[in-house]
Amino acid sequence: MSTMDCAGIREMIPEVASGRAGQAGAASVEAHAGSCEGCRAELALARLVYQSRPQAPAELADRIISTMRRDRRRLQRPWWGISAAAVAALALGIGITARPAADTLDLLDVEVALEDETELWLSDDGVLAGAPVFDALSDEALAELLDELQAIAPPGGQA
Amino acid sequence: MTDEAPGAGRIPDSDLVERGRTGDESALGALVRRYQDAAFRVAVSITKDDDTALDAVQEAFLKAFRALEGFRGDASFRTWLLTITANEARGALRKANRRRETALELVEPIASRGPDPAERAVLADESERARTALGKLPEKQRMSVTLRIEEGMSFREVGEVIGSSEGAARVNYFHGIRRLRELME
Ligand SMILES: [Zn+2]
Image (cartoon, rainbow over all chains, first blue to last red):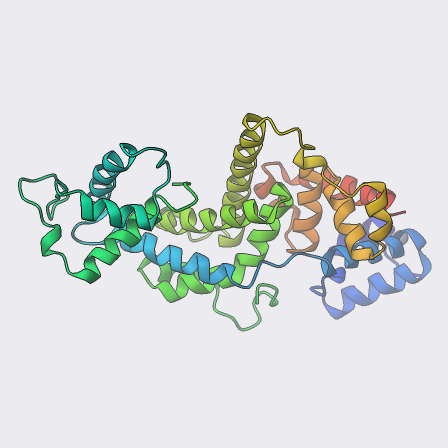
């Protein structure tokens, strides 16, 4: 017989079922469950819930971390930051929506748009300016911009 | 990883949050690895769909990290993150339900999706039965049970995540457990 009543035991069951309880607590719950059918069933059920808990897919963390890096680059870039990307996306969006049935922006669309769209330009401070600057971008910088645009409008279409 | 015992010689959340605030991406990565499973469980408990849940979890982490400046250091990062996750998951579920309605697909509502009697016979496995039974509980009961047992949260923390008082979280938990036992009999 345990000195603790069922209500007290049931408060402790989640910690015991998940192995978080201290030794003394676990021992008193086990002892009580040995002679109390209701608490025994509840302990078994809580163990089942704990043991069958879902796990995130293994690749989730990497996916979140790489999206987070892109997100932070986009928000913190000292020059041509979010405003420039937004301006470019807006400009590209105009070109893209003019094309039939192109309601999603994928990398291929952007590449095509950049090649075709000769009127695209943006300045260092993200304000539309009088001279095209895409020519001055390195391949790497251009790739980064495409990366950002994809983050803004991912292939799934969920911005 | 996520299930390591809290305080077992690991870097406290508050330190990782502080480092994350100053732009330390490895600290943010550590928080992702520490809480991705808990966040996924919260999200899937609401959406009952893995893909919708995964999107909600990713969005929740991004929003949390963007708002890290305004996060109070004395609050629990886990509770805060899981609250954001629950909100994201509810939003994603609403969106998914709207899409389903506008697509005029006559599918069973997601909240009552469960095995039919023929399938149920195949689900002899106790774990499967437990998850199926959990899926039949009202959302607040289900979340109270899973947050209390799977994440080891106090009723006060459970209440924060489900948007209820501590007392309501306790009532939801015990009602949920009782209903679960009935469903499992
Ligand atoms: Zn008892």
